[in-house]
Image (cartoon, rainbow, N blue to C red):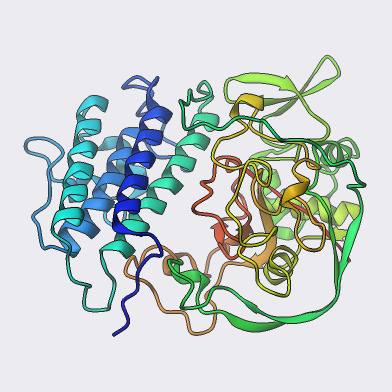
Length: 446
């Protein structure tokens, strides 16, 4: 049986795990025990639970699944599975659990990381019955922690905490600049048949990216840049939130139920539009991408503007090109000049102008398809043909369409996404009413 693995070595993966844990600890360093619990909300986790869940996930796959070890308790008389197993512990109950203190929780996460590091380096395990080896589960655990680190960042935004203080691994803004060429308008892309998704031999990929399959995309025109604050402000000032004809039936129900009149974290004070960035209100920057809008709001804007959201296949074709590049610019590694990722623009207010980073353009001249803001697509999150769940069966399959509102696919990553996670093929997914994530959108001509 072919071993399903990672393209990184065990030593590299362990090094990345320690770096990810250092970032996690930076993201919570200034928060006290009460802030690490926070209010009971459907869109966040108590942070004392979340950071321990990350460690529990690593322990389960690397120590128990691969080696048959006994669970490591977080503290005396506490069972980790009853506290931190996300499949067993319902979200709404996580605030009621006997969660250890912040310091005890950090010590628990470090014990697990140290044990995992020692075991995989000194006592490699054989692949499991399905061919998944240590490096696969190290890579899975690493990217799982990266996702939670991004989620911790938007939890701080949701709860109005200060911006996190990040240390030496935080990048600078050197080399960033706006384009000197025309940024506005659409790019016309000719119809093509191409392979959507990831191939089996692509190294580590998530199960919902498999399997790559041929799709035919008709000719379409897509905007060169993401929708800006200025463009969305025009929709707001035209009464877009008050006109039923711009909203889908589900979107209008959401708008009325949420009493939404503006994007989340926007306000108008003395005639000036402002947005909240963590705990600060700043003047709304016209040329930054609109962010913290949900799928319903993006769809309503499109209807008002006579536009539409791109399908997932259109988005991937526009980003990857005919030759299926891993990144819009090619196969070379991500750099600050190509994409706003890894919290690199935190000191610059998180986001960059929609026409910045021309070095990251796709072969069609489309800008920032990786980084800055996640981008909503028109596509429901559903399995590709031939889908088979990976070892972590709860990652994708439970979120495919059922009797409720379908999740929508997002592409491209945001400023707090790790560069080692994101590629053109990566599929994110959220319910269409989620406004808390770092999501915006770009549009297509009808």
